[in-house]
Image (cartoon, rainbow, N blue to C red):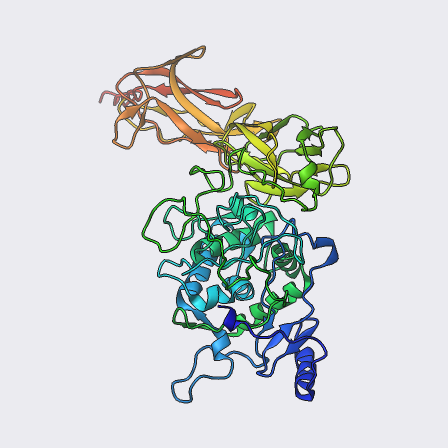
Length: 582
């Protein structure tokens, strides 16, 4: 594939024609530092990452190199015309069929699960173009798997970020350093929690465009970002690769694809020619679109797909985003390799986390904090700490994710995002681990308590009466409160009882009906609505007369007893007799 990489045009082009074209491109483009080649294609020549983010610790790609080609200056034609042939720019506007389908399916999935994100598929297409040239022009199988792995160069600190191996080579075949993997160029440590199964085959494969596109969508939609907001859009793109030039390059393709695009056959897409690293690969290193001398491991589930398929880091078949405590193997540091802050971490300490508890549906007021320390107890800054929600819970971090990676501050402390309790009550664990190094995990116990009410009152004052064998005209409705405020979504139970101080169910008198029209005298699974109200189903009477009791209880101990009366209609009074005739 190296034959497809064009020579990178540098600033200060030597020919007058190229220099003039560069000036025109700079005038028309939103991106800074733009050059243009002899064919009118633009590229961002100044593609260095921002200084404060050059280590790539918190980006999806590890700030790996990317393609800097920009769209043509003319607007795309949505489809080539059969009468006059392909329009200018139609090749660049075309997206391989399977790749385009993956982007659109990812957008549809995020529209259901995170509608507030407003993810456009064109953003995924823009990132896919910049990261891998749309999976090398759409060289994928029918199910979306690349015909051969797409790997970035090893992130060994030599011109790139320094990220030592975090997956023991499971995804990138490199047990010394990480490499970005697949058409959306995820580094293994990010894929370990961000990976998704986009084609429903039971495997999360970074080399599958359906899996990678869905993972990229979730990655861009975390933290509650709304991508229709320009500020949030910028944050999301820069979180993928922390370079201002990268941001403008992606924006240029996003705007271009929004103006029009069309489907082309798989494998026929054009390949970009300019890259942000623009250097000759060293022996043993690779760039997206090239193969690697050391193939990824093949110890993964067998299936019909061509090419190797990785297991989850650390082995096993756990839920994505919940790696086992030992999912961060410590690589052997090669001789002469500079030591990183991560290499010095001996253990994690709790940095003063208070008791973690919240009511279902509420935000936790407490934040989890962990401190990285050396064996001597010295704090370590600039270390990535991964917090993972573990256990049978629907609680997540703010933004809906169950994993968050935070870099320790100057005091060696990493503070996790706020937790938001789900609706499932119970205890669970938040596990803190050091990314890229095996040290004992630090577990935090958290509790979600069920929603409760402390008072129930009946709505309405009408007497509840019925004749034997009839139906009560009035339905029972009650309102739940907690400390005087509406208690919504609180579980409730209604039971016909034998006496006010006895919880035993009555076997005669009024009853409800189940789905089969059979009498039932206990209703479970009731829940108050957003206004704290519960309206019970109709009540029926058997042939027994008398006064009966309906007891309603809620989580938290609120109780209300309601009287029901079953009585015969009073006999009509006899008509007054006619006076006798004289």
